[in-house]
Length: 310
Image 1 (cartoon, rainbow, N blue to C red):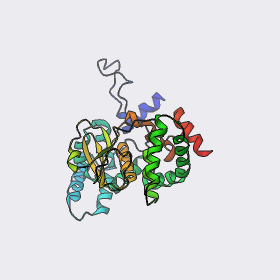
Image 2: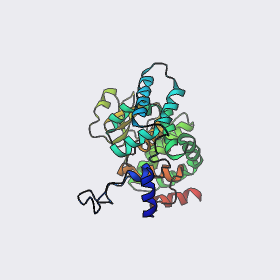
Image 3: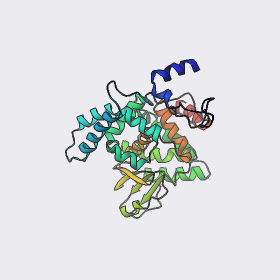
Image 4: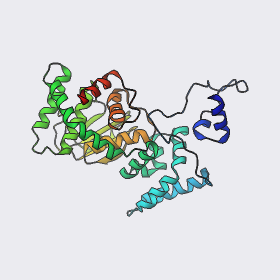
C-alpha cells in the first residue's frame, strides 16, 4: 500500500501529496507522519481533486475573481456562476483543506457559497449526493415513525420527556399542520430525543440587532421572531432563521428546515467538524437520512435506527 501511495504521489495525486513532507530520515525535524493528516472524514467522494488539464492556480484564480464580480450584480447570470464554480472546484478544495482560512475570509473569496443553490451544488460535487432531494425524501419517510417515538418518550417521566412534551404541545396547538410545520417539530425534537443540549445551537432573539452579538458562536441557528415569547422552544412563524458560523451570519432563510439543511451543507462544503454537543443529530442526518458512511453508527444512533424500521 505504501508503494502504491508513493507512485500516486509521484504522479501528482493531490489527495496523497497533501500529506507529503512529514518526518523522515532526510527530514527529521518535520512534524510526525501521523499528525494533521488531511483525509476524507465523512464519505467525501471528491475530497481533494486535481486541477483540470491545462489549468493552474493562477488561471483558476482569475475565474474566481469573475465569480466575485458576477455575484455582486443585481441580475446574476446563474448558469455562468454554476459553470465557473464547477471549473474552480479543485482550487476551492485546495484552499479549504490545505490553508484552512477563517470562514468569513473564505466566503469573501467564494461568495457564491452563500447562495442556497450553489451550496447544494457544492455538496453534490463533494459527495455525489443531491442534498435537499435526498434529505427531504428520507426525512418525510421517517417523519410519522419519529413523531410516534417522540410521543412515546414524552409520555414518560424525566427531563427529556418533559422537553419533548413541551415541543409536542406547541406543535398540537398550531392551526396549520403542513409538512413545514412537521419538519420544524421533528428537527427540534430529534436532538432532545438523542439527549443533546441544543441551547447553544438553536437560539432565539426578538430584535435583529441582537444578532450582532455573536462573539464566540461557532455554529448556530438564530431564530428572529416578532413577538416576545422567548421561552418557547419552537417558533413556526419566524421573521427569519440566520445560519451563523464562526460569529458571522452567513445566510438567512424563512424556514427552520431550510436553515438546518444549509447549516449541514456548509459544514461539508467548508470542511468543518461537527459541533460536539450536536454530533448525534448531525450524524443521524449524514448516516441514516443521507446514507453517507451508514455502516458506522454509535450505540444511540443504532438503537434509533432499529426503532425506525420496527
